[in-house]
Image (tube, rainbow, N blue to C red; front, top):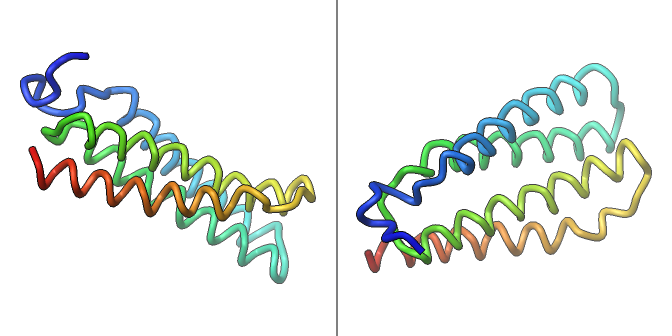
Length: 123
């Protein structure tokens, strides 16, 4: 694995691009929730939009922050957490699936931010 400190960050153009895609999806989900979904489902969709947008912007902004292996692992956990959390909520609204994976996604998000923080603290 390349030395993350020497490359000026996690070296993850793809993480920055993924973050931008999450942010774009968050905007689209928010519009969908505002115009095409009613009641409790609108709230679920807005929550998914908020998490996708917020974490997407964070990933895009932090992808080139100097870090170490923990920093990268934290960011990967955040990226996976968004898919599981927001994706589970969207799946419930659009496809009527149970939101079974939302708690796991939430735990990955929390854990990812904690691992990222440790990585930044120890670099």
